[in-house]
Structures are given as structure tokens and as C-alpha cells.
Image 1 (cartoon, rainbow, N blue to C red):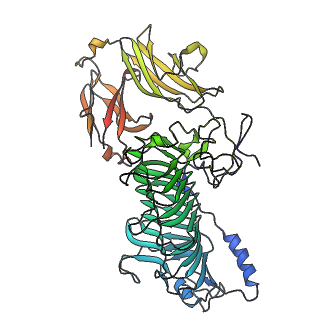
Image 2: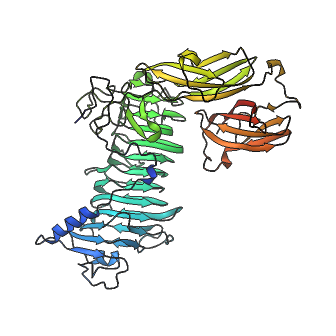
Image 3: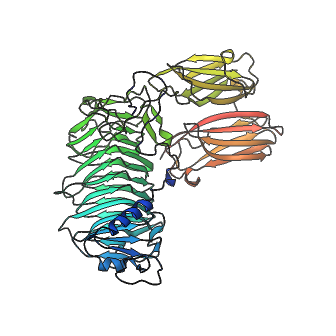
Amino acid sequence: MMFKKASDHSEMTITKRTVPIYQSAISCRKVPSRTILFSALLMLFLNVPGYSTIRYVKAGNPTPVAPYTTWATASDSIQKVVDICLSGDTILIGTGVYTALVVSNSVGRYLTIAGVDVDSCIIDISGYSSGIPPNPINTRAFNLKDHTTIRNLTFKTHLGSPTHLGLVLVDNFNSTTECSISNLKFIGGFSIALATGKVTGEIEDCYFYNVQRAVQVNFGHGMDPVILRNNLVQRCNNAILTDFAVVKNNWFLSIMNNGLDLGTLFYSTRNYVYNNLISALEPGHIGVFQNQYGEVINNVITGFNYGMEPKSNCTIKNNVIMNSRLAAIGISEWPTLNGDINFNLFYNNKMITGNSTSFDPDTTVFYTSDPMFENQDSNNYLLQMFSPLIDAGDPNILDVDGSRSDVGLYGGPYGQSYSYQDLAPKRPKFTLVSKQNGKVNFNWRGGTEADFNSFSLYRSRDPQFIPSDNNRIYSGIDTLFTDSLTDPTGSYSYKLTAKDNQGNVSKLDSVTVVITGVSAEEENPTHERIYLYQNYPNPFNPSTKIKFSLKEDAEVILRVYDVNGELVTMLQNGWLPAGEYEREFSPATIGTLKDIASGVYFYNLLVRDKNLIPLFVKTEKMMFLQ
């Protein structure tokens, strides 16, 4: 095996992955089917003398005969088989859609329920309203009191079903339910997809999509903690609510409210949270909420209002908390937050904490530099070769290869070994381009990597030109530059790159600037020329108006970009006669961008004649406040 620690800087490749880190279309992930494995195991079990009975269910079977021990005599109802099973029995469910609710009151019975294929064994309760027995409020697809092993099923309901629950394991709060839950899918608006009381065991390899809450585990003290691992929770309102669990190696993606809710009103909590990716879909509230006596180690938490809001006595180490809109660490304890909070990276947050009286980050070990992930846009949080997070974790925590732990998703004993790659810097991006008196002023961002060396800016009349030493006009580390043109007329194309110390060059960003020859003192609108006004109001919420004027008929394109240079919307794209025009930018009306982030945006006006020759190009800045 190739280990991640390398003595040379030659090209390296990943040797082992525990999750599909390059999968950008993560919503298409399929939990692997296990039909062949189950068939083989069942054939083996059937030939072992004295082994407990296997009973079959087949949707629509016209010849069901109890005790349902062959496919030919399989029950057409899951409930009929549940009613006659003895402890240790297995229920094998064939392909089909099953709509009847299932209830078991057999406390202490051991029962295995398995579908032959996760994608074709479907429990669908979308046709039910609320108030179905045994619960007068919530409709439950499976409501079981058994010690349960269950796998290879898909639970479905329609969106907006706040009274539907998927799988419920109940124990009357007097006994402990043992469970082994794996390879299940929960799709639709379940208020809780998987709910338990006093339970111990494992919940793993499950997929939750678009539910209100994925998993709720309560009242777990006094037993072994339930283990939640290798699950994928996506586009859910809340991911996990638990007071006593081990939560490790899960992906919680595009969470809309709280990622992990580890608090309770009644007693202290003790959860152990390791190596999870927890990301928010705006507006995510808190990544990890509360948790008192447990540990939160080697996680990546990104995009929430608050990355964490812990309670005292919690250990918080080796985490990456980034892109928090309000603060990395929220404070709910007064006057002082006590705990072991060290060796974390706080990156690109509005602030580390809004209450330095309760938590003073200067008394802890922390980092603020670019983590240098391979490609976080594709959920690839492997560290690059020169990342400052390598061997920067708690020295008392070791990686799987025995070295000092890395900070981030793959460090620590529950992480993985891999080879660090030497990649080119991220593409730098122009943030502002303006013209005045024959000069072009540039601002850009980038160069945040630890091994960054310099930027290079290139210019040519030809928009298809290839950057070279002959057309380079700037090289250095600054992120602003003024180009004083000797011929301030016509159009110029500019291209920008970044380079690291090893000579790796980034992808380029480009912009075309059209010089109209108008001097600074002529920058007032008249009916004789094209003009782009400052938006009003500015800053704005919920909307603003952008006004422009044309001196003659022309093709007009008006775009809005975010600070990353990504297109947000196009407000105008087509031919207009001479005159004054106004377009409204209202984030709440832009399709899926209803939750557009606060911050700076740019609007760009391009005007072209009938031959598509640019007559006017200008960009202005505006501020959206939520």
C-alpha cells in the first residue's frame, strides 16, 4: 500500500477512498444492492439444520399459503408474515411496491427483514393522511418493537408529509432495542425518516433525501451508544438528533437547518462525532449544535450561519469550520464556554466568535489559512501536498499511518491514508475592472495557497491570443494593477493566471475591455451616448433597479455576477431601440435562487451594434443585504 507521507514531490495518486469524493452529482448515488449476497446466504441458511425459518413476501402473489416458506406460497402482505414470525426468523421481501403499514408489538423478539434489492423493494405510504393507528397523529410505515435487523428497502412518501414517519423502533422506554440497520433509502417529506427510543446497534450505509429529519435517537444513556456511519443525508431540513451516539464517516450535504442536533432539555449529552462532512444549503442554521461531554474531531463544517454552538466540557479538535455567515463558534453559554477547543481551522468565516468574553480564540491553538483542498466544489476534501493542515492536528491524535494527525476530514484514526498531490493553484478571478483617462484598473482575488508564487497578467488585441512572455504586462503578488494604455481606443483582451513555487500554473481568467475614448470629466449621462447608472437603492433588499440609456438601436446584454465571477441571472438579452430603460433585480424571483447570499454582486452591461461589434462595456458593484 502507498501511504500518504512521501519523501519526494513526484506526482502522486490516491490509493484508497472511503467515500465517493469525486462524485459531483451526489444525488444520483445508489446504495449498493446486495441481491447476490443475500441469495447466497439464504441458500446456505436453508441447508443448515435447525436454522430459524425464512418466510417470503411477494407483492401481488395470487397463491399465498401460510407459513409462507417458499416463493410459490409467499405472502402478499408483510404484516401477515410479521404476525406469525418466531424469534430469529427472517422475512425476505420480493420486488414490488408495498403500501400497507406494518406494526409489531413483539417486545424482545429477534427479527430480520430484508429486501432482495434496495431499488425495487419499495415501501410507499404517500397515499396515507395523518391519524392512522397505532398513532393518532403520525402515520408510520414500519412501527416495530422487535430487536430488528433490516436492510435493502426503500421507504417513500410524497413531499410535504410532516406527519409521516418511515421506520420507527420503539421500546416503551422500559427496555433496550437492539438494531442492525443498513442499506436503506428514505425519500420524500418524512417528518422523521428513522426514529428510535432506547436503542443500541448500528445504522450504516443508508441514504436520506429531502426528509425533514433523517435520524432521531433518544434516551440512549446507560447502554452502548448507537453507531451511525457511512450514511448519506442530502437536502434535508435536519440531519441527526441524538443524545448518545458515535457519528462517524457520514456525509451530510445541503442541510437546510441544523446538521447535528446533539442537545436535550432534560439531561447532558455525550456524542462522539468523527470525520463527517457537514455542509449547508442556504440558509443553514448551525452545523453542530450543543453536545456537552463528547468529542467533535476531524470534521469539515461549511456554509452554516454558525459552524458550531457547543456546550462546556466538549472536546473540539482538528476540525475545519469555514464559510460561516455569522460566526464559526456560536455562544450559548454564559459567562464562559469551557472545553478543549484546539487545533481547528477557521477559514473564510465572518468572524471566529461574536462573544470573545465567553470564548477567547487567542487562548487556543487555531489556524486561518487556506486549507488547500483538492477540489471542494466536488466535495473532494483531500489535502494537497503543501497544505498547512498536514501534521497540524493535536499531536496526541495519530493518523492511520501513525503520523501526527492532519486537520480535516481524513485525519485521525477514523480517516484514511492517501498520497498528497501537488496541484496547480486555483484559478484567480477578476473582481472589478474599471476605466478612466485611458487607463484600465484591475482587481482580482486568488493566490491564497501556502505555495503560491505570483500572478501574471497578459494583454492582446486578439481575444483568442495565447499568453506568453511577449504579451505579459504584469508579474507579482499584488491583487490590483493599472494598465496605462498608449492607444486607449478599441478593445483589449486580458488574461490572468497564478503560479506556485513548483511552477504549476492555474487555469486562466479572462476579460475584454472596450475603450470608448470618453474622458473622466465626460462621465455624465446625456442623450447623445450610452450610459449605465448606479443601481438604486444600494444596498438593497428585497430588490433594486438598474437603469441604462442607449443613443441608438443596439443589442443589449445585462448580466449579474457574484463575487466568484459566476453568472447569477441575465436581466436583458436582446435588441432594444434608443432610449432609457430600467431592469429590476429581485433575488426572491429568480427560480431556485430564492436564498441568494448577502454580499457584493456585480452587474455588467454589454452593448453591441448590428455587426456584434462592442460599443460599450461597463461593470458596476451593488450590495445585497438580508
